[in-house]
Length: 614
Image 1 (cartoon, rainbow, N blue to C red):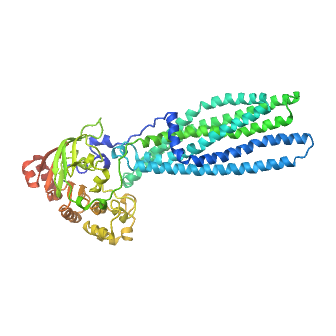
Image 2 (tube, one colour):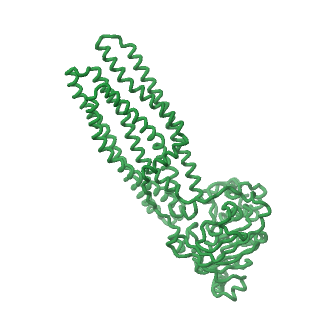
Image 3 (tube, rainbow, N blue to C red):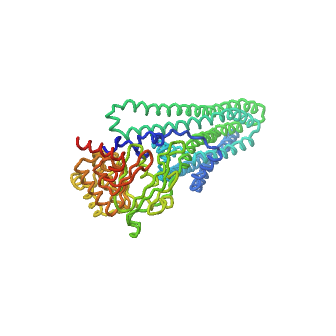
């Protein structure tokens, strides 16, 4: 290989093995900071606001159902009174039946409206989050595990559904119902009300102490769920390597550890929720016994009637539902606030200002080959890391082919990342067509570029979908032309469904060389003005490499082609060669000039000659 350590120098986007880049790309397990209550409510209202009219309607139906329920104890009091006075109870029974039917029907309708709205909240949240995550800067995505980001779209938004509708409405309607019930209790008998409130307040205060514990445990459980997704994504992303390495059990152990972590925190959350719920039930039962004892003595003394005691006990039992809803609302808030914090953390990650623009939308006058200039460019992936580029300068006029060569870690692939604005230069300027890339609209800049990554990724789907991924408006004629140029036409003819053949996860049904040719064809179909090829022929056999080399040479007549190359056969075709070493440009020239004038290039070339002759 032309590079003494082939494939070692990569930027963080494609699995760098360069020591200085490893720390730049390694995803971190980020701890989620809990948001202040005020900020949490602000975020919740933002999700709630578009649906506030429908939620208000659902809340209204819920309150009507609650009112129908509250009327029942009053009707029962009249029923008991009429029975004591030996009067007719037919009208009371009809009223009770009506209240029961109306209350149940209206409450069910309200519950349906709220559940439907909750699903809409989740949909809106997922759409917003997905749109944001796919516009994240490359450097942001490299900071976290992809699986963790995915869990925020799936499990965290699911938790959001309960707190944005049910928790808000249940808390509001439950509080109103409790107030109405207490008012009715006070109207019936203030002494019995005092007994009831005394027990509920004492136990309720102790219950409130466990709510923060529920939130903390749920937040940790959600983080662990994110780690499960990350671990699985890691394993499936290199599934064949996993199998070949016999690493199944080790990877299973890693995923199981994350699952156990989620289980541990989930159990903690369940424990504290159980404490909250049992405390509520205990307070009602104690209140019932207290009211029964005190109320019995008041009936005996003639202070209240039996009918009033029965009605009060009915109200006390009725109080179970709104108190339950209120506690459930608080519990859901604690659970949901953890999810909100993780969603907000994802929303705060930096995104790119990107609008859709395809190559066909670029005016014909702007189709000329692009020029590239680096002016004293310095770059490092993070402030705490060493520089990758130390004043890199070179000029590439168009059209033609320029090859970048040098030892591993020289910063060759990083050049492409800076041109594409995957990263921003720390110092100096990167110019395309004489204009700083910082001044280009991102969509317009990238619409002029065709890019083939080192690993030549192929997406799950069909061959056609992969080819048209960067050129959705391409015609059948365009596709056929590209297939011929990339030497893919014969392969496609052999496939069972031709262009519509499914290639498998990450192109697993294709060979390495076939995936590379698909990636090259995809870049050519984009009809770029600037073509970036990062070891684009590294996995091709000699015949296909020769064919693709001829294609690149042909393309370079009309397009500016930049190649990171490790094979001498590719390098010798270049119009100019940029030799990089330790983040600097040490020489620029043709193959013959550099063999004579640059010792490093001469050494690399000699190594390649030895490799090809052996």
